Image 1 (tube, rainbow, N blue to C red):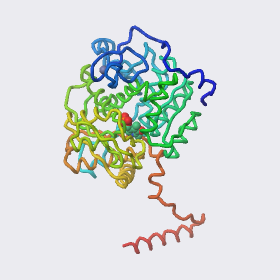
Image 2 (cartoon, rainbow, N blue to C red; image 1 turned 180 degrees about the vertical axis):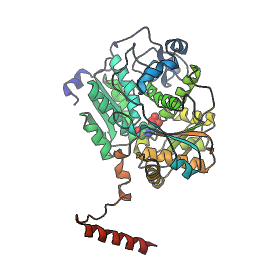
Image 3 (cartoon, helix red, strand yellow; image 1 turned 90 degrees about the vertical axis):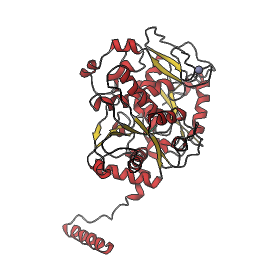
Image 4 (cartoon, protein in one colour; image 1 turned 30 degrees about the horizontal axis):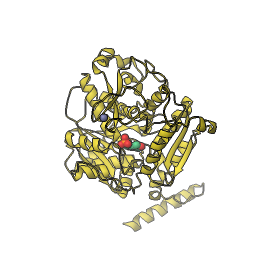
Length: 439
Ligand SMILES: *Cc1c(COP(=O)(O)O)cnc(C)c1O
Ligand SMILES: [Zn+2]
């Protein structure tokens, strides 16, 4: 639990000197628009042109430091790609994060009439059951390097779970900010780790705006605010794993759920890096973005060929994707368009149907965001945008146990019976009678 005494002592209008400035870094922050470099510090915007910063690497030196063959002896989790991540010095964090299955689909692929379909299953990501574990892992390395004792985030749910779990494990205080109406399971999955939860009367975009002010005022590491460039690098490992699990090949298509639009752009960055390093053969990959119709600023921007998306007020059961003003929206639109891909969105009933279909055919229970991705994949196939023989990877990013409220009405409890054989036989007779009546 966050110790309140620290609240006062950490209040500050400026960051003090930061610990751990290592001269040997092979990475630093660079402005995505003007290209100016800013070293390494807890900062997410260029002070010259106010564009977002991202971590850039010295790939020549990296290529000499690590070869693809070096990975063979390492455990299968995200740290096997440690040289390609912004880790201070040669420190590799001890806890396993990532390393999730790439499931080759059989039943759903044939149901949809295609042959090379895979599900990258971050519903079972360790430790908190969503891909957000990956981004928090790299953000907390940065938080430690910069000397933060308190970490936090603005969250649509999964990020709060991941921050709370890893903060507990690593001895940070955690203070997370969420919209007041989040799914109960996601709130509980944060509280149980001892994190302080601040519920905000407003949607995610209100929460995020408040967090930008808090990051300015307090000396806290807010993973998706002042640590955002380091946070988003963690998403690359979802892409590295896909390429490695395909036998060091890139797929033809990836279908990615979009909230802030960061994950999809970082999978693209991962594929590009592997190509630059010569670890995979260069090839065009089409990027497909998935959103819920009730919050679809990015897919709307792609479909209407807008230069910039129009912000929306979210209204969907896919609350982990409910960001109406996505920070990386313009980059996601550009990527999707230039890759020759597309973006689509589906309704809430279609999301529920897709969750059930994925569970019944592949044995994967995903949350609403995964329903969005699976349902949008089905739509893209029916539109002919995904070819039957192409290799397609669908990114499943979170676990169904976190959003049971969204599908509970589909599965009303049957009446209980007595623990006797005659009761079971009567039960069966009733079932047959009901089935016959329904015909
Ligand atoms: C946050 C989140 C996403 C999307 O992430 P962005 O990088 O913000 O686009 C996708 N799926 C789940 C389950 C998430 O929690
Ligand atoms: Zn700039």
